[in-house]
Image (cartoon, rainbow, N blue to C red; front, side, top):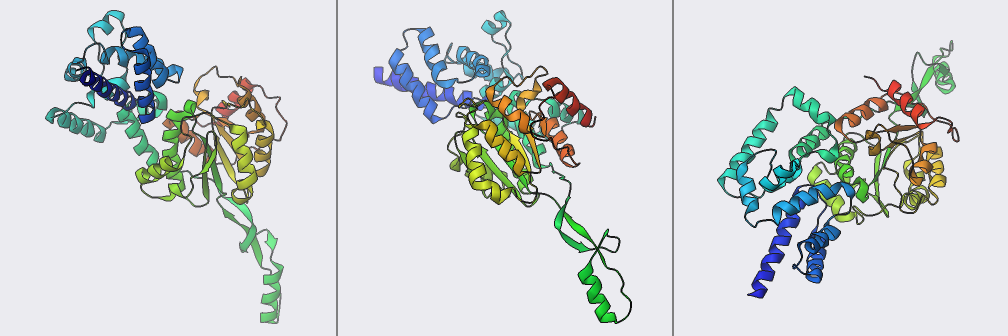
Length: 415
């Protein structure tokens, strides 16, 4: 009997972990096993001990606490509560206990709870949801453009992925060292002129030429640490769309190590491509060693991918586990090796953001532009910025304060 009860507890823990994962928390099989071991260690005699045992193993970020707290009190208060909540069929749900405290259930948690329903009712709701998505109005799209990636519900994330797949990155063309014939060119082509004169045997018609123009190489370096997980997963869809839209695109992911995923993203099917990426990358949602990863990039890859005036998109929040050790030196080298270095930071969604972390302070002096990347609107702004020539900041000019820097970016961005 005791063994049967223990088996049911393990099943409930697995079900609870799946619910949290569906609500957006990064809960995998490893964490569920850790939760089971933690519960075995503390026992189930005390509800408070049980709560904190699960909290210690399933929560690793401050913003996840409220979602976990709601899920715990809903799931473990009554074994039949989940089915009763599903039967309510409301987009924003309140239980009797939660209503007394005036706390609304998280949208992502509500969707996660509803997603577990079985039978024909679930199929009908799924069909209705698909139909609503198909006839999304213009105002719905405008609202979706402004929703933070971290606050999106499951349906909004799916809609955002479809919108990202349709994005195009119109990077402006730049002159190269090679030339092409052009009657209106500014430079005289002496070789072509002399060859024409020898063939004609008469006058010397001047032949002119102009530099060839083409898109510069694009290099994307994306942080996949725990603090960036909600953003990096959607940015990966953007990277896939860009990689399949143009040539000479190189993509790298970094957390505690650097991984080149350029070939993996070449697959046309985004699901297959991201599945291969997930199987290859070993440091998802871990710590961040930005300086170490940049040192490896500068040593191994920079000469291969940063030739011909490459454009670099550096996507990170600047939080570094190694206290920015060697980061300033590697950022300076990266900046000197490319045409333009743009730092995309999701923390810029906060109006009062200041680069107080050591990593952010080391990065800021060596970037040409600093822009947010937290919703669809910020990605659309990025495509507009890359379609026009940017201003390269000389190294060492850090007199611009953070406020002046942000004001200058707002003036440049078209309304």
